[in-house]
Length: 203
Length: 181
Image (tube, rainbow over the protein chains, first blue to last red):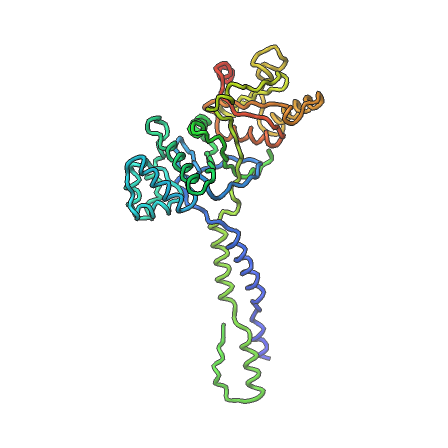
């Protein structure tokens, strides 16, 4: 009798194990890792459900009149950085290029890029370092240069058109967004994806 | 917990068979623990819903053809939506303060009981007159500098919901700015 009781305290875990690994596999396969962002924005909601393409895309984050850029793909980032370096007469070393390739997005003046890349990777994403890319001054419009270089890079290397996504903060003034759109339109980049979240309330 | 067969059983026959039977089930508790830990990790670190986007194509400003060949649209077909500060919203038909009825700016609200009904009403009127789709309503969206981005998205969303095929984002004229003050 005593032996019987002892063995009955065990639960058969096989099924539970099966289920949990099935779920695990599902999550591993369907997920895309959250990219760390220097400036997380509150996206406005919409009912449209067009998905954003994940490659060959340049995302422009706009928040509090500051602009941050995100490029997809490690090789693309290195190539675009080198093209920017050529324009602004800055030469980036191999280490700096690799460091840049690991950055999902950034918002620094190109002239401060070297000092940012020299920092250890854990400190690179600190918010204080990213003050936004200059775009208001027409003589030093680095946003325009970044977009142009990224477009050149994607056309010359892959013969594909770069897509531009605008990620505006919900409370951003329309004037700022319009300014960004005008910069893009000056380069005849007339098509953009406006990134939105899913609308949950009854609209 | 997991028991290993130490193999030190002296007995033979029936006794040995019994001990083997007991060890046949591996203790999976630790494995399940690990699996759930990983599940939790993946659930928390991943963004489940990929952000959505709105496709927006603007007319080419540099192409002279696009600028000079302005689309002729009838007053009855053209609706202008003005977006102002603090979610102010106005609309008018045709030319601003023109001869066409409804050309004085009227206040409206966002959402399904506001501007959407107005748009749907106009579309229904035009459809009755045989104008629909690309031949139907033309909506011009104009926002002031101090309107928020959300307001613009809300109106663009309205276009998607009501199925307006021709709409454009345009710059506001001085007269319209005065109206939105």
